Image 1 (cartoon, rainbow, N blue to C red):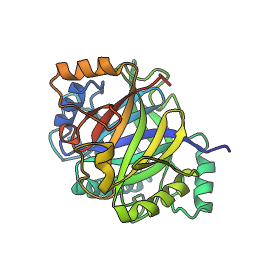
Image 2 (cartoon, helix red, strand yellow):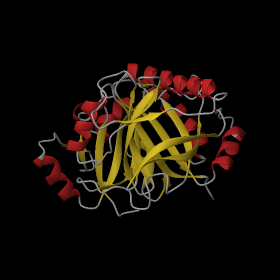
Image 3 (cartoon, helix red, strand yellow):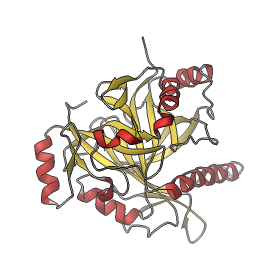
Image 4 (cartoon, rainbow, N blue to C red):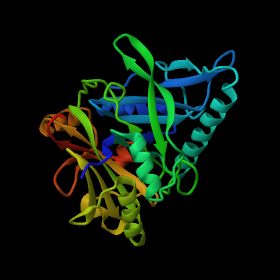
Length: 319
């Protein structure tokens, strides 16, 4: 069976203080350019959200903050918010709406609140979701800043957000689908990361025990797939190494010893693929980063050391 969703496009990690989060992520061995902040007015003031990306071939991890939360980093890129005069009010309102959604998520806890799936055919995905009675706001076109060897450029992106407890928001945060564009999602090669990371391969969602079955059914509709049982968790295979894992709160420790969810439902971890897990471990230990192991023996940086969401390092082949 052909699937319109073929992997993970990105996860978004919401933080209160971008400056501190950048420092920590760079110590963890992720290469990130200075964050981009849309600005308005004279003198220009940050507006909406600030973000930056750890790029891999075809997907990425995003660091996001609400403008006005924490200090603007010294290497931030200030990008004027531009649109034709007649469209500017609508654009500002859309940015305010997204920022309000993410601010509500950040009030729950600091950590990953955004999960976007990768679609070869986003219009087909939108139609399938509508048929499955999954509400969404339709496919939107936007632009986002991308750091290249020639500087920052604005690239188009098409995406949709799934509706749940509100427009563009489900109980665990912001979940949606973005068009697969390898050039936009990090370029042909992505960035070189000192920790050896080369791809986003998993996101782990923890839910209350009595919500596990309903959450599994929801994600079956989102993904057009069924999950398989894998010990204490349920796994949606998305193709290649990519997956979404669902864990009941009472059994999270069987997957991630010592971890608990800050709020339910919540994304408690994501996984990046590395070529050489032993080399990654040597790098992180040299930086005095706290480390643990998953129940499968994989290296993990605990949530307490990574701004609210654990980061798992899995030895995989390059995409």
